[in-house]
Length: 306
Image 1 (spheres, rainbow, N blue to C red):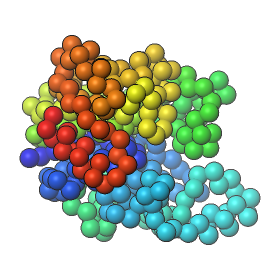
Image 2: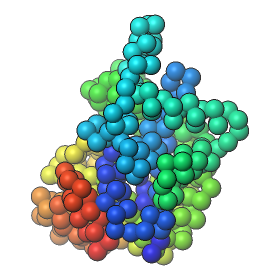
Image 3: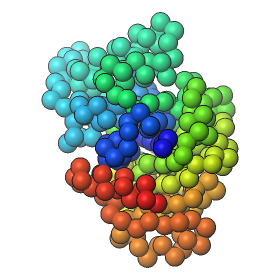
Image 4: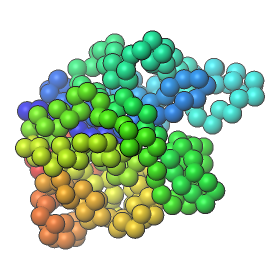
């Protein structure tokens, strides 16, 4: 069975480790958000691509959910000594990935090609696709001004009031090679438990992606990242509320309803099942909070059952 997943960030990466245990890795394609990509210290950094890659390769720092385990931060410490603003944490081994990516991009390689090279070098059989090779930058509008998503998320820790998300480059960005085919050729499409606005929403905003989801013969199943009216990690609840979308499993289902067939929600949201079903969606109720590896496998199994 061919499976395509839409992913962004820590929640998606953790879910995918469970999925990769119960399906053949080579049967899985992951389309990854690149709206978080940012240039810092002269380097092209792709946070969500790296989180997914490192996690599936088994080298991620599990405690943080990002970066490489047992990494050191000597380069960043020296940069700080030199007066550089080092609000974005990058370990020494992590920096090697960004140096490699940046050099290859300057040599004329595409982000898709570089992502695949790193995937192969780390021994992964799962296909990892950036959503686009073109410039795409998620910016967050706040009363203090508009800033890059990573500045909002990391530097300011999501404290400024969220007013809106703006997608710089959306009008011209095209889906990366293989993205639309991965959606049309799949037997199952999974929307991972990622932020609907700035992780999945970015992918959906790329020309042709939403149409491909509407046309695909695959069953499309989402996992709600909202549990009992709040997000497990990140500012998804704050953003949904800022956009006037109900912060609930129902709100997530409604956000994806035009292309969705089924949704998996947490047991604490079982009361939402009837309302969601009225949207014409099948509903699977289970534990969606992934505290252990067994939780990840169990959730992935529930998604396949849905």
